[in-house]
Image 1 (cartoon, rainbow, N blue to C red):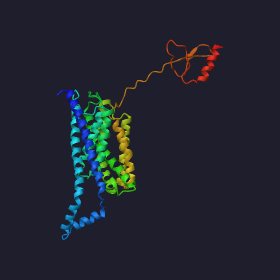
Image 2 (cartoon, rainbow, N blue to C red):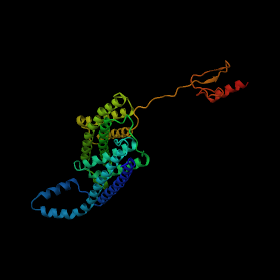
Image 3 (cartoon, one colour):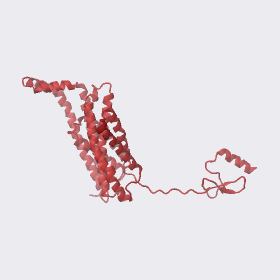
Image 4 (cartoon, one colour):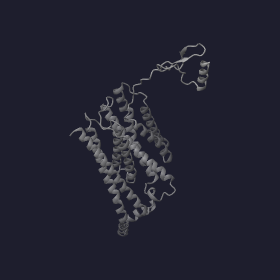
Length: 371
């Protein structure tokens, strides 16, 4: 297949992925809007119900009543399963779009040569980590947040960030770039999910009606805090490997220097320090709850700003414009002299005043010349 054909397949795949992500978002919204009509079962009632269900004599009656009451819940849960299946299908189309984007280049390359491709890669890994951790961390309640976030970023990427396929620059054409970017986007995806959980923790804690609506279906505050900690504990070693190991190796291979004090490098290190401080405070001082959630928030903001500049040039050739001398009319000596600002007057024009002089002094000087 030709490069144009692969590029066309990539565009069609990302368009299809966006549509399917949107359908998954609608399915999750229908699920959670329907759950508003179902009363929330408290933790005590769930324990009592489980205890009754384990008894021998009343087990049959309790299970029969539970089956009758669970019919509306089963119908509502169907929308949740549909949303999950649509998310899996959208992730598959998303992966096809990434592969097609890489195969459309000549020569073939990894699909993160510009900000458009990096946005596609980042959103794909957010979805992939969500699907991988779905059963392990019981993230069914995070479905509408993840799908809405991915749909919004894909719209921004397609409308404003799209760029045609082009070969990688020489500095980006390195195997260490592949290792560095893969580890960085995996860590960014996990940090993003952890940030979602942290925000939901703060929202539920400050909610005036925690027993109604979507907030009531969220896990307990302790479970939310534990889920956020697990996501960050997974992402931090991967981010360390990306920022402090593979990144400097790639920089040394490309620019013969392990550390250049580039703004992106500095912000990546600041992000690492913030998350290291959070994990250290959690392990030693036992920081949990609101303080930990607020400490995680600036780390994700710095991580997002660092990732957004990952495809820009790290070191640009500095070619400052030489400062050219100018001339002005000296009223005392009657000839032109060099002014301190070293700006030169345009060729073919009369001597002008130095930049920065006030107009009042210039008018006074012109009146003296005419007299």
